[in-house]
Structures are given as C-alpha cells and as structure tokens.
Amino acid sequence: MPAPLLVLTDFTPDADLALSYAAAIATELEAPIVLLHIRRTSLLDPEALSGRIPQWSEGEIASELSKRTADLTVPATVDISNDLLESAVAAAVAQHQPQLIVLGRPDYNKPDELIDTTSLTLLRHTPVPLLVVPITAPAQPNLRRVTIGADNQPFSLSPQVVEFCQNLLSAFNATINITHVVEPEDDDNSSLASQQVEKSGLTTGFQRITTRGQRHLSPVDGIIAAVEEDSGGLLILIARRHSILQRMFHQSVSARVVRNSPGPVLVLPAQP
Image (cartoon, rainbow, N blue to C red; front, top):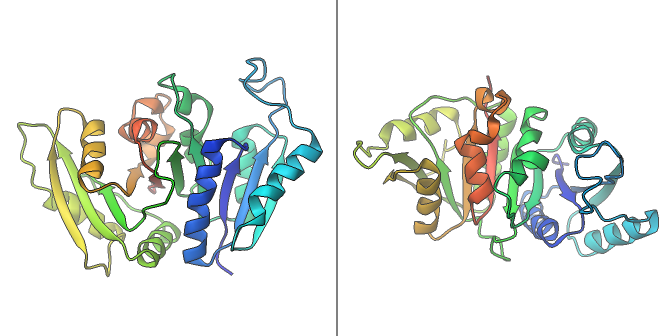
C-alpha cells in the first residue's frame, strides 16, 4: 500500500477543508489517510492561556474524529497526541512515514500568526512535503492546474519527494506552468528557471508545460498574481534548507507566499 497522507485536524472549518483536499489526493493516489489530532492542553503551549484552544473531552474527540473519517473513500486511521505541535508531528512522521503532510490555514488577522504557531516550522523537523490549504481556497479542489514558482538557483529534491510530486501531477493529469518573478526592469526570460526545475526531476516526462516570466516589484505578489492569471489551482514552492533553518525564517519568500496565498500551496523541502 502507498505511504499515507498525514492530515492535521483541530475540527475547525479550515482543517475540514484541508481534509477534503487530502481526501481528493488520497483517492487519486490510492493512499490511506492518517488523521492526527493534537490535544493542546499543556501549560507550556504558547496559546494555552489565550483562550483560543477549546477543551475537548476524550469522548468528544472520538466523536469528532469518527465524523470526519466516516465518509472517506480511502482507508483512514486516527492518531491522538498530547505533545506540542512539532513533537507530535515528528512522532507521527516517524511512526507512519507519510508522503505528504496536509493542514489548513485560517484567515489570520495577525500577519505572522501562521509562522509563529504552525505550519512552516514543521519543515525544520520533517523532510516531508507540506500542503497548506487556506480557508479561502475553493471548496472543490482544482489540482489539474499547477504553478511552480522557480528562480534561477539550482536545487535538488530527495527521490521520495520527486516520486510523490510526479505521482501527484500524473494522477491529476496536470497542466504545469513554471513561473519566474523578476523586477520590472529585469529580463523576464524564464528559461534558466525552467532548466532548474527540469534538472530537479519534477517535470520529467511531462509534456503540458509552459513557462512565464512575471515582472513584479514583490516576488510574493508576483507569484500569487501568476497563479491567479493561470486560473488558480495548486502552487508548488521549493523551500531550500538554508531558508528553513534560519532563525528569521518568517522573512523568506516561501513563508510569505504561504501566509498570503488565497489558494493551496505545496511546499517541497529541498536537500542541503
């Protein structure tokens, strides 16, 4: 059986939307789902005293998990942890060896809340692709149109990450657009960026590929604009190791795109 998809849930609408995306992907890949709920009850939790963490009984948790697995068309198991987020996910990854981690993103008011509390910090500890689904994403997943944000710098991906991406793109018969964002006064030729993507193995064997040189003052806004001009769909970004480990990670382009994108973003961890 293929490796599972690990889906984080706190029973909120954004987590439920993320589960629907995971279910669509799991169905096409014929992969099982592991639904992970983290009971954030420790006083060491950064949000424990903020009043934002609902207190669920064991029975309520079991009931909520059962509701969310009942209608899935792929095999599903549940996992409950009392650890803090990073430790809980790292333990789940070690146990289940998932090919993808999926989580929802609320419509945050605080600009740095996503980085401070959840998703991109996971990439520091788990070399697994991460799909972040914002609550603003379409209710029906559109994974047949894929934009890959690329620059002119080389990168490499593990064989497992390449295999997962190729299976995903093949399963949805995706049309791929490689986008390279430059300053308005710079040359918008995207051939070198396209070569870097090709060398990584992501697009090997695919024919429906276009390239786009996108001029924009902001790399973040330029990438998001390119996705919107391409009728939405899935955005794929590369998170290089040096960016993941730096203490000011929230300043990276990948993090800011994930925080601001209205649609789903698949972040791939590059090898050192």
